[in-house]
Length: 369
Ligand code: NAP
Ligand code: F7E
Image 1 (tube, rainbow, N blue to C red):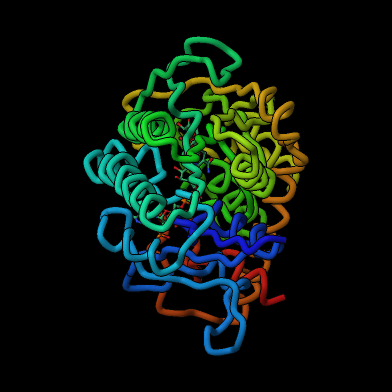
Image 2 (spheres, protein in one colour):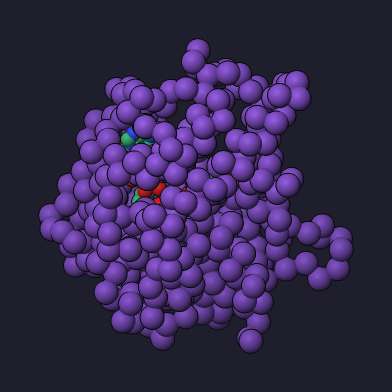
């Protein structure tokens, strides 16, 4: 295998962790960009991390931020990547309505900072670096047609989606204007046990498991009628990699081709633990968005025929996988609580929840057993 080196922005996120895993398995040297924070944010990649002093370490982490263009340039020159995966983003759609400018700066201008750095790095070193941009099905927004393909026009419905449209077209433009090997993966929703706890799938599986163990009673949600094409993150990062192994750069829809509502998600998750979700779910208007994306359904025929990519995990399996992980976590929380364990990071819980010790990383706890 030729010497391949990847730079991943957003390596501490859900997708970054699965992609780092995949590339390390394939023999890559992987460099991850980590934002400085006052707490550790590396829980999702702890299992991949080795002390850099211990010999031939293939995963290295570097402080950096998409908003710091100079630091990105310095990093590329230092790390000398052959592939760049731009996964960093303020990725929460509802939050983007509260922080539109920050979201636009990171998602739109941050991507442009990295594209500019990649172009100069390629020109100065002669290394024909390949660039992956994490584009999103949210760009289809108020959908013009169903299912959505690479040719479906965009109609973004949030500050997040508007910024992703900007980044999408910048990526296309760098390909056409400067001959940069740059691809957009238009990824539909993808989830996993590592999904952030404020996205709806994880919110539901966490709550169903905690209710089952008597750790909380209510779950507050917004629009239950929204429909999404939900796949498994582990499958989707494989598609990112395949895009950068093609002879020519292009843009691809990555989706399962199945759509389900939030209600169906609730049926499935609460069904696994034998609970009736209607007794626990309450509607809280704060979780509605000023403009909603009602339905997403992707047609990944192009990825199937050109990349040979198909998803392995379907909706029911995905929910089962997430429930298993969250049940494991809730079981441990219950055990700790029953043993009288309390620690300083007890979250302020809604009145109907029992206050319990919380860990920031679900999988860190899972790994204990
Ligand atoms: P995620 O879990 O929210 O991870 C986002 C990552 O970006 C985190 O590592 C975060 O670091 C980092 N980040 C945020 N702002 C940054 C900045 N200014 N500079 C450097 N890093 C920054 O998201 P994900 O689900 O893995 O998604 C990965 C990418 O795919 C995102 O671009 C997202 O918009 C896009 N996408 C996701 C989906 C999906 O369904 N998951 C679908 C389509 C597209 P911290 O850990 O410090 O917060
Ligand atoms: O919402 C509804 C909500 O936040 C899904 C990001 O990864 O995928 C993700 O964006 C649906 C929406 O994901 C709650 O209104 C109801 O219709 O899990 P979500 P998202 O907005 O689709 C795309 C492809 C990305 O690119 C994004 O980065 O569920 N919903 N009640 C709720 N959603 C949340 N979060 N919380 C609720 O209580």
